[in-house]
Length: 159
Image (cartoon, rainbow, N blue to C red):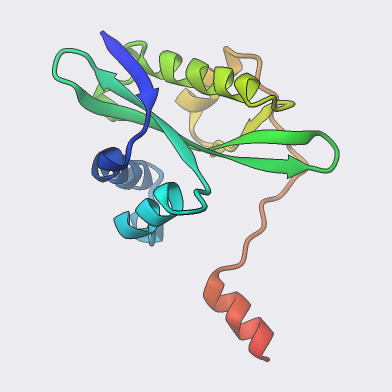
């Protein structure tokens, strides 16, 4: 019914569509400032910074999901796989594709000798939370996400 495989450069347009679909679901389509060109350079250039898997519907070979990951280093835990985005297109949710994809990412973390993996989930995304609970995932409450955009960093450095 579904096949999970490593992502390829030619998959990026379908992946970018999934990213935009996720942004709509998360009520933040205007937040997507990434481009296909950036993804191609960052995923397939001389120093790739992310990898991804795709889940393909066997009957028509269409990409219906992706898991985008990279590696980070925790001074407390060592090498960790960070699952940046995990997307199954809405009409395919609940049919088993997500389980196959998530378990492939879990296996990747072991193949790469990671001490574990991490990801984020929005506190209102009950279907995703329930999915992760099935795997016994821990949910942290005391950590806050912090970020600065490139424009803000430029302004801070120049002032």
